[in-house]
Length: 320
Ligand code: AHG
Ligand code: MN
Ligand code: MN
Ligand code: MN
Image 1 (cartoon, helix red, strand yellow):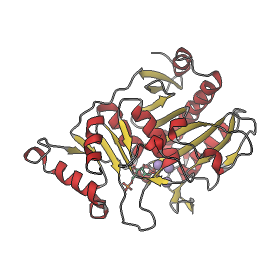
Image 2: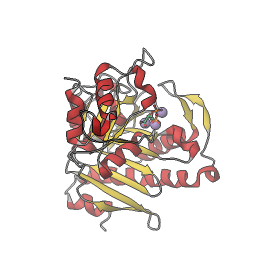
Image 3: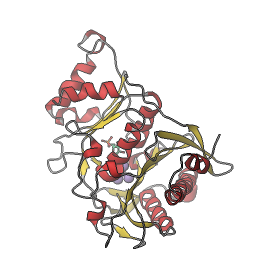
Image 4: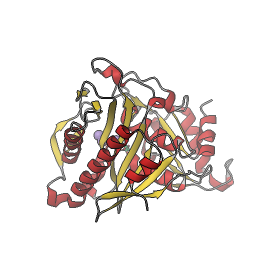
């Protein structure tokens, strides 16, 4: 198995970008060790603070955020960062070429039940001039790299620099990532869907229609039965989609009138959309390709429908 470092070299990745991705991998390895030690590392439970999104932070949200921030500051090529757990952007090195957006810990509600969590990251080119929020407001098409680490039974990492999506596994002995798959391919068709069904009454008509038809199974218009999975961590659900196909969606809903969408564009939807598209899948809001959105804020939220190409297309036909 080739190491992440060798794989990036073989892909002729820009050496500074490789250095950044190797650092991100190293940071994820460190977070993975904290997650594994759990209660022994004192990382479980809630903190007494809220983030800018009004969510109560878990200790591990803050620990992971501070770790990523501190270690990215080591690299002169990083101009600034944006994080789910930071109200504003943070300036690091004024001459840096890269901007990094991240969700330090995705699936926070899973931490205290010892279930799947992960880290999601996205790398953008840094525009010239002073760093502001506007520096980050670039469409997902501009991403130089996107990836996630999944702290599951084993620690895995999915990564794309625009040359397909690669999957790596963490070797706990050498504390390095080794390549499992050089070209992840999401099957075009599927019989598995992922949605938080408890929000059904709050969805809009297109999603109501799509899920209703799907639930009718083999005797309905879809003429096949579907299975449902919901991990409650996007990182786990997207990993399943990359592994065996499926459709994952967090659609618009009117449960909370001033918050119609759940997932964040810059550090959840965009990096996952890149990984999915690079693995032959599709990622849309229902009305436009996620990677084509021109962002309006670093914590902007969007509807997400992603996964197996034919199934996502089918779901989009209800939105036409
Ligand atoms: P985070 O833990 O980073 O705030 O993200 C949680 C998100 C996402 O990972 C997941 O798909 C979704 O919230 C789960 O939502 P429900 O609580 O509705 O299941
Ligand atoms: Mn959160
Ligand atoms: Mn998240
Ligand atoms: Mn998070």
